[in-house]
Length: 398
Image (cartoon, rainbow, N blue to C red; front, top):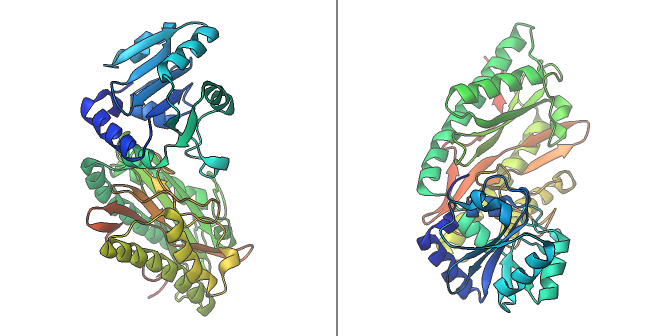
């Protein structure tokens, strides 16, 4: 258990100002057995086993409605606590707590279009609607008050990004050395070495990697586990790796491409140029939006990157969104760059971080992806790592 942002009067005041700006009467957190990690983080909760409702009203002090056996789980909570024991009492006191308020922000997503935001069970929504509540998506509030990075998180991310890049480069060197000696590593062995190196170099939390050789790279989420195919000469090699330094740190997440040959074949170069160009188009679009002072939504960036690949006749092979939110979760709760899997119309609010990772995946043939990270700061988009991949790495050249 930790002290969450809603234990701070200053943070509550900031949330309340945002609620009033959005013409909302409050933010209602529902929490049950970790179903809503946003509520867990915002309220600073550890494990609880009974339902709770916490209201941050647009005016006045926060109030938590909790089960009578769980007061110890709320001992950090500086605001009013109301208890219940039976379900009838819970429903009655919930109605009293809400006090006729109708427009309340909650972790809901219409038609579940953004699954990472859709955290409230249908039965609870049914109950609230019977009380008279009109639940409104808390998406932009979550981006601002949960997913936005602190200055400390941003600085640690910058360091993490360079470590991850260095580990990736060393992994390619290691793969090439084994291939030259006709003692190729398995995909899983190289992935295990990457995980160990990330931990050893200061990124021990959730350190992981997917290594894919040849046609295996055409599966966007290919995971060889501890074995997999041989990382042998003559094949393209994709390395996707990610980690964070501490439990309250944010992720760095990158994908790099190499080839175990002495040159890049023309067809592979054409595919790479489409992927790289899409990545750069997304970055350029973000910079343009910042310079113009205009708001931008996640789906718009996806449209720009996807159009670049479609124009080069690879559109059918770009089968996932352009990028995902990153915060204390790898696939975070903020806005994604997505107009394929969902239409993510949440704004990129100042402070959020996300990946840009267009890819082309031709089943049974080849997969190519380039992944960098972006922090949407006051000065515009900051890209990490400092040096992004410009060409496929030729691993067996002279």
